[in-house]
Image 1 (cartoon, rainbow, N blue to C red):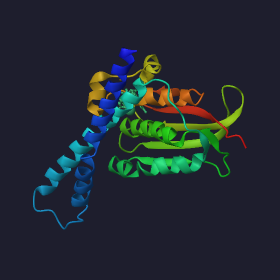
Image 2 (spheres, rainbow, N blue to C red):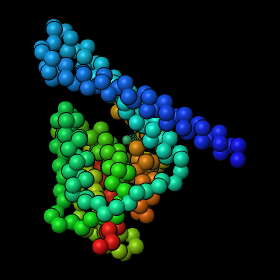
Image 3 (cartoon, protein in one colour):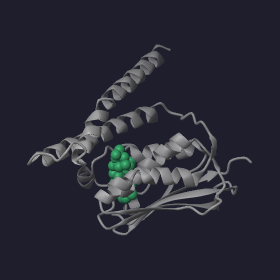
Image 4 (tube, rainbow, N blue to C red):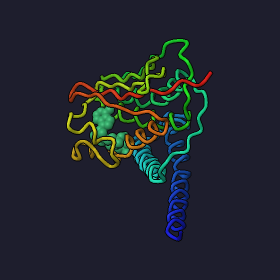
Length: 241
Ligand SMILES: Nc1ncnc2c1ncn2[C@@H]1O[C@H](COP(=O)(O)OP(=O)(O)OP(=O)(O)O)[C@@H](O)[C@H]1O
Ligand SMILES: [Mg+2]
């Protein structure tokens, strides 16, 4: 119908501008990192603060654009997965590695625990990576300095009783009050708007996680206690041998 055509155009347009917005940020972030790392020689007096401000704002802008892209994909409805036998330990190691710089900056310990010989799961590695990125983004954002974030995997039974691999992202952060634990998976919901403004973000991460895990035929749950921390978990089915 005509409405669908307009909708399609809207999505294509938003997708295009999101990509156009992201491209110029790569050199901005890349060069600020090189400058701050001393790769182009020592910065003149007083320049460090300015370059740091450019880097911080650039990162914020990138996060917003990522959220916009995530929202568009969420809005497109059913996610088309490209499932393949996926090595969980390797994937967790890679995702966690990409958070180490931020962890150091925020004085957090981020660790991975996956036993040897964990069987492969049937998953879309790209979508799974993005979902884990959202969970780690939250865990490192809502955990004060000195805290710990751990990502772990173990063999466990799924909801259907079939054997699978459980993945858990646990933090020692601020936690989520019981009456809000369901709601945080809704898009744009943030547990405490005054508090979350301090933390940034638009409230899309967990909606993406939920959609992704449900597309895999599974379910994501949260256990949390305010002031103690939160654990997000889900079980993925084993890949057919
Ligand atoms: N690990 C966590 N610890 C404490 N609160 C959390 C945690 N993860 C999510 N929340 C709460 O759930 C809300 C929704 O999370 P979600 O990831 O969807 O949005 P966001 O992180 O605020 O923004 P975005 O992900 O779009 O950057 C958060 O604003 C926060 O209140
Ligand atoms: Mg988030």
